[in-house]
Image 1 (cartoon, protein in one colour):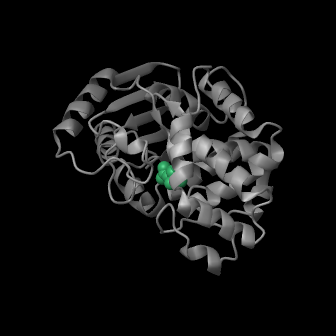
Image 2 (tube, rainbow, N blue to C red):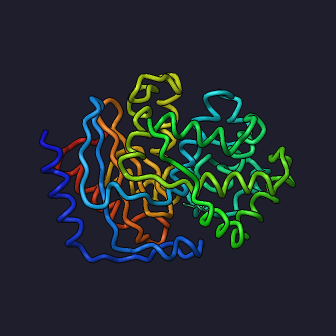
Image 3 (spheres, protein in one colour):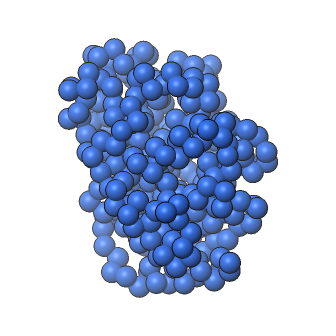
Length: 303
Ligand code: GLN
């Protein structure tokens, strides 16, 4: 398959659609990003790279990081993690509080903020130097040292993250946060602030497509555990738009309000798009359109 040609077609077609949506407004630093950025990168299972547009420009990965924190927590805790976080779609917004009271502080899944905060708490408990160790994990799976937190973005979210603070306190009241709330929020804001290019993110997600092994052969998770996390991304990766993403694109993936989407086809490829304009569910409008065009043109979808 001539992937470069297909990416070119997808890129031009997606760009010619009406460009709707706004850059994330909830984090002041993110609202400054140029809304017209657009990049796509595809990495095949054989390690070939194809990129177009702004695919080599760093952006804030935000909630895409939740797929990577849950992978790390799963790698050392195994099935234990599901005692504190569920594996069901929530059907609610990413930052919703509503289900937590009924479900006694057990978030529906690790991709809504409540679930990601519980996973962050597990990492804070388990890692010796949580932020540094998580960054080291990201550098390992991406195969590059050139990855960092954006401290301005982390600080900006800290100053305005009232809802995440409410969620963390609410979880703590149910006993589902072990560490102090400030420490967990600080870790969470930093994981979200990590910046990567489409290419770096496509490389980081490679182990999800490659039965748990990174591009340089490190086994991060077992084949079976990767299957489980891919299933979770398929059913919960886009919050209350997970059904829509599955219907239109047909790949497991994870989005972030920085406008990134990382998706994959097990044993075939990883694909990452970046376009900061978001739809009302907080997912990248152009990214979703581009991925829909890609799987429609190529027929490369898990369905
Ligand atoms: N840091 C953001 C928040 O917690 C991440 C949300 C997202 O990317 N959907 O609000």
